[in-house]
Length: 281
Length: 358
Image (cartoon, rainbow over the protein chains, first blue to last red):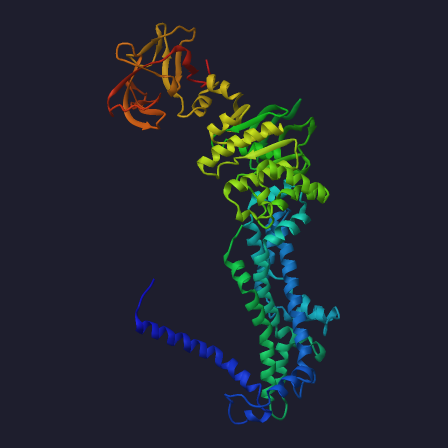
């Protein structure tokens, strides 16, 4: 549809620009705030850069996130990264394997098992948090990376999406591989894995962001600040018992927490979109 | 030596549906066998049973004398070409062709030599580093055949391999497949629903109907002596004219006015058949039967005339359709009457009850 109506153009531009402003303003405030001195937030929110930028950033990154959290943010970044990547790869591996079993193998109670997996969609972490905590505590996994990662890696959503992806695989291809002498393991690695490349990428993006943004679970099971993750530690920095909140440091940490997910989305956008819409088989 | 033997082979699905009641077939080494039949006749099922992709529920399947009923497809020493080619989209042509060898532990140098020699034979040398989505339909088809050939199997299985190609390419590939098969002398089982493909490719044809082999024979045997009305109607294009008739003492009675002189011991209802190309144009005095023209298809080299038999009605009162194939261009008026003679040697007679040849 090609139309040439100047007022419509102006109007739609206005809407779009307003939208961009609404989305970008908090980011701008965070960016500007990260360059201010601790006291500048006392009366109003600053809207232009201050002169403490380099100092704030290097202090937060390499020395301590704030007065209440004596741990440098690079360490929190590392923790978050380990957790997010662990969850992502764990989820992809587990759900691919279970979807593989459900789609390509005939075993008793196959569809029952699928539905049981599917029903766990109704039980997110928040619902089963108490029993999960109990299990992890009994396994002595509080304050550990495996404690952060393991309870998160079973995913009904990913299993379901991989199942759909595998089911759209042409039957003739599976048969051709059988005739070519590819056993189950070979078929999985030689045919299935490379052919689900785009789906894996899409899943990676979704799961990485899910893992990165985990808040409640790390908050509960980590008491040792060497295992704190970035996202939950921002909350920690805000709950100062006395004195002022160090908004400048919070802003730096916030910006740092935003970078990895943004990088993943931007970097994998092409594959991501392809994986969700494209069926190039 | 017989290469492939199907002994009383049958397939019944777990739900009780009997796809193939029982088929016996023994195939000589190097023979090209075509399984042909309308859709749903069980031809693909039979091929897949030979391949090992469908279980065999009855009978024995022997390849080179070994019973292979329970063997995995990969262990049967067969190779299959699929309708949609089934090339691995993420692999290059070379990798596609070599994959079966790789899985069998053939060393890389040997794989490369084999792939190269097959690629040369099929004219694929230039394409070895491309991916399947960079190839045309005909090229993909060729790669699929190459993949089957590299392994040098005992039996080739083709499942309607040409049905996704355009008409011109299909004719070309048909000839090529035939030549290759002659050259390699590999026993081949080929499934198609296209009777032209079947006739041109086969050493022997198996016409399947509802899971049963209606007739097994060379293309000419099937054309000249179809054993049943099903085969008669299936082989040949346009199909044979089949008319209800009755054998009496005076001859064969097509209707009240047309009685063709003929003597036979049989008495009673029959189906009288004659191929469109066997009707000979004549005139009113000498002609045996008359046709009222309804439609004319001019194909240049030949003309197909569709019409109805004059003065005859089927039991339900509708006119009796008749097709004639004449060589060269003809342009009869629609509705006009044409006269033909029907040479005795070109008749086919079938029992009206059993549909079998008399």
